[in-house]
Amino acid sequence: MLEEYSRFFDSEQLQRIRKEQEESLLHIDHWDRHRERLLQFSPPPRSELSIRDEDIFAIRAAPELEAEYAECIGEMVRGLLPWRKGPFNLLGIEIDAEWRSDLKWNRLAPFLPDLRGKRIADVGCNNGYYMMRMLKYDPQLIAGFDPSGRCLYQFDLFQRFLRDDRLVFELLGIEHMHVFPEFFDCVLCLGVIYHRRDPFTSCRMLFECMRPGGTVFLESLVIPGEEPTALCVPGRYAKMRNVWFIPTVSCLGVWLEKAGFTDVEVVSTGMVTIEEQRRTPLAPYESLVDFLDPNDHTKTIEGYHAPTRSILKAYRP
Image (cartoon, rainbow, N blue to C red):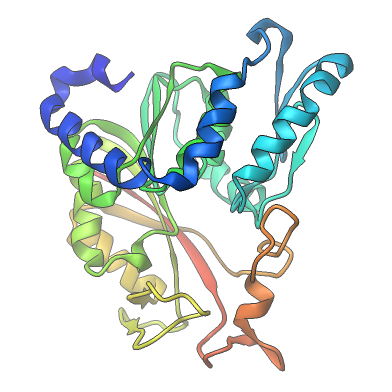
């Protein structure tokens, strides 16, 4: 689908980066069994399916058809765990992911601009949950970017049923957004910026990939405080190794403004709860409750302020 827009960017550069990413992220033995399942899999006709965009994004069919596919789909779903984003229902198979992403979506959705006919990027899209939730707004294109083979295959499983040409997944990260100069009308970047060694440059990359008049939604872990400062984590934060800078809300806004954005607005700020992020059968590893001080859930196990997230909205003038 992105090839249809190649007049707007350097398609040869995209092909080169895409090939490099695929060779490093997909051509590994770990995925051989899943690829074998896909070769044997034939999805039902699209006309037999219905989409239900509610808190649980669902693709459903008649009971007899769901029963026919239950074993095959269940096997593929279990083969792709852990599922970090959800919830989903795929032909009756419940996918209860680690994150109740519907809760974040409900905080974000009321602030979305008119997306009809627009080009959208979800940078750090994971398995595409938010991409699928945006389909109902009738955009022209929703491109998801995430350098994770697991996320690609989880997205691909749903896309085999949806078969929606507006959805595109690329194994690219925020560092590759320069490939798409002034291309997107709306950009989501949720839960990425604190994993970046240089958050300002990352904000600038988001700015440069957006068309003038476009809207960005940037979410980050944040620390308390009024001053535009950031915590530089010396070790782990909530057991995560790859956390570099956790800003105050005002600092996050300054990063956006210095990158060129205007009209910065706080959409939401709140502490993450153990109802929103938790261990499930399809994400059977440590989760939020294991990252907190067992005697004081207002602190991480390392003694920092417990995970709090803020979403900011801004514009490219």
